[in-house]
Length: 108
Image (cartoon, rainbow, N blue to C red; front, side, top):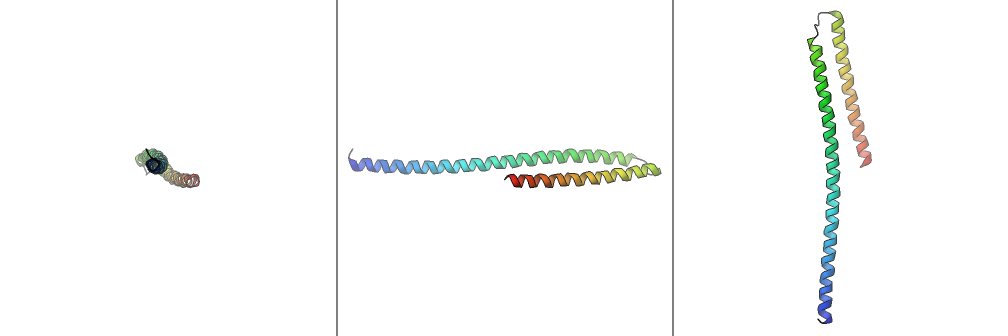
């Protein structure tokens, strides 16, 4: 092979290597993005599972309260207190979710 053919082959190889390096970088960036999205989705799923468990507990408590006879004064007061506790628990859950989102924003 003469000098000119070697130079042409070398330039072609350099161009292919540069393209491969660029593709490699793009793929690494894509993997990083997908891993981040995966982490966020897992976190959201965990939160949804917690919310579902809390809602199930709230439904159970509501059913218990509904079975109480409201004619009795002390039972009526108990029912009002349980409903008040449920509202407070809901506020705590909402605050916890807001706090968790704030923490996630700080880590990203």
